[in-house]
Amino acid sequence: MRPHRRLPQLVRLVRGLRGRVAMRTEFILRFDYGTVVPWVMRLPEGGLTAIGGPERVVLRTPAPLRGVDFKTIGEFTVGAGETVPFVLSYGPSHQPLPPPVDPARALHDTEAFWRRWSDRCASAGPWTEAVRRSLVVLKGLTFAATGGIVAAPTTSLPEELGGVRNWDYRYCWLRDATFTLLALMHAGYYDEAQSWRDWLFRAVAGSPDQLQIMYGLGGERRLTEWEVPWLPGFEGSRPVRVGNAAVNQTQLDVYGEVLDALYLAHCHGLPPNRHGDAIGRVLLDHLAKTWEQPDEGIWEVRGPPQHFTHSKVMVWVAFDRTIKIREQRGDSSHVLERWRRVRDRIHEDICSKAFDPDLGSFVQAYGSKALDASLLLLPLVGFLPPTDPRIIGTVRAIEQRLMTGGFVSRYDTGTGVDGFPTGEGAFLACSFWLADNFILQGRIAEARELFERLLALRNDVGLLAEEYDPRTGRQLGNFPQAFSHVALVNTAFNLTRSQGPAEQRAARRHPRHARRAK
Image (cartoon, rainbow, N blue to C red; front, top):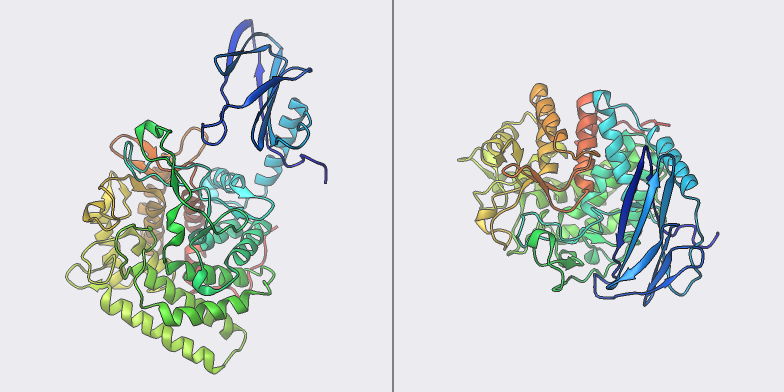
């Protein structure tokens, strides 16, 4: 392997189209979240190198540069037909300088790669371009060396401007596993799906009571959260956080995500993971002892643990999917029968404790009167049919009580359930889930209208954040957000295929082995 082959390079080309234009550039570099002012030296061939401890950045350009007050400025003129390149390279300071690249060739090769890759995308009818753009986002959020996909490449972009709901999303969440697999496989990207599946199994390897909700790109487990007091935050939104303390929470739903991903990979014909059966067995043995405990739930609340409905449903999914795999293989062991009894007991427990007859709806947690958009996932995972009166009532209640400006909020933050002050935007993935429910209930026109409304929120290059504030018309939260783009892809395929991701995940009409798209 050539040294530096995978070191990141950022290329910018200033092209003159007509006339002559005077330009000015300013380059201010700080390492370690702004605390380290680097030592800057000129390069003989033009440009500079900046070192701070273990890190080095190299800026190569023919434009004249000079240092002024701990920053680098440059002034140059570009005329018609001229190009002035800027190439920024990063690498460890103890290694030789990253080798120079040909800027024009780098641009050509980059465009060619992404065009070849995105052209493989399966058709999603009138929304193929939107799906292709979202898949490019997912690919860009993927660490090729491990297959891990980060939730977002940013930290502390706020869920409410000026507020404290600011989190570090530069990690891989197990909760994204099944939706991501479905999106990649339906679009025809089976190699990427397999890489993500394999990352998942490497990350969770170990004792089941040590399963985490998120990991680093390589499967790292220590993601200690700390605050950065010297940074002002986006539009004054403090604190700025590095790491994520939710890594230490108990969230029972992730067990269901892992085993649902295993089942879907099996149904779509991905090569089996040799550790899959063993992982399934130990996870279910653990869940059989712990499923009745409260947890912090899908939204990672920092208030008291509760018996969240969605968490219990995903525990049911864990047993259901593992049982289905064993049944397809002809297993008739006593262990399977024991798992069936636990699965049925969980289902009965949820239906008796999480459904409120007065509201005609499932509720956020046992004994609660609050609603939660995660309840939209109940029919999507096959817990109950989408036409069940309890599901219809739940969808109706969410439409009535959690819709703001035509989009869905996760829950009412005024209840104090999450331990933080009230206020956040509508959650985009939840709005896509509502469209999926409309599709499953045959409300196609409403699903299309909501889907188009969501597409209109994308910025000029088709990117979505985690949330949207209908009052200000601004996207909120970390950006771009994998969960939002995955939900977009799945809803598009739900609208354009007779057996879309929602039908498949509900496990009502799974193929024994779906034929891999090429």
